[in-house]
Length: 272
Image (tube, rainbow, N blue to C red):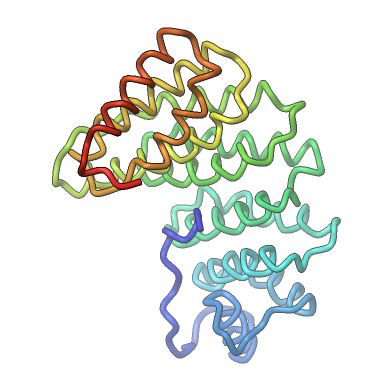
C-alpha cells in the first residue's frame, strides 16, 4: 500500500524497556504492530493501544502507531474513537524519533483512508494543517511523510473542502524535481518526488480549476521527462492520469499531453 514504504519493526524477542507495560502486553502489542498471522487484533486491544500511545518509551509508542494502522484497516474503531486516537497521534507526526513519525503517518493515513478522521470538521482542518506543514518542510523525509498523507487526504476530502484540496495541490507542486544523481540525499529526493507525483495523480481527478489542472499536467509531464534518468520507476500510471486530464486542460497543455503520449507509444522500451 501507499504507506508500506516506511519499514516495519523487525520481529525479534521483546526485551526489557522503560515501558510501564507488562512484558506480555508489550509482546502482544508488537505482534499486532508487525502483523504476525497468529495475533489478530480485536476491539479489546484498544485500551492497550491507547496506553501504549502514551508510553514514555518511544519504541513502545511507535509500535502502538502501527497497531492503530492494523486496527483501522480492519475497521475495528467505533465512530467516537478516532478522535481520541488523533489526539495522541498528532504530536507524533512531527516527532524527532524517526520511527514514531513514520509510523504515526501510517496510522493516520489508515484512518483517513477509511474517512474515520474526516467526520469532525475541526479534526479535518487540523489534519490538513499537519499535512501541509509536512509537505512544505525543508527536510526531505518530512516531505515524504507529507506526500503520503496528502495522497490519502486528496482521495477522501469532501467536496466542500475544495479550497483546502487546491491549497494542498499547490504545495505539492512546489516540491522541486530532483536532479539525476547517485548520492543518497538525491536518491531520497527522487523517492519524495515519486510520492509527490502519486499524490498529484490522485488530485488530478478532483481538481476543478483549469489553471491548476494545467499546472498538475505540466508537473506530471516533467516527471515523465526525468523518470528514466532518476530511477527504474515506471511512468505508466502517469501516462494514464495525463490521458484522463487531456479533456479538462487548456489547449496548450492538451497538445503537450498528446505529444508525450504519442512519443511513449512510439517507444518500444515502454510496456503497457
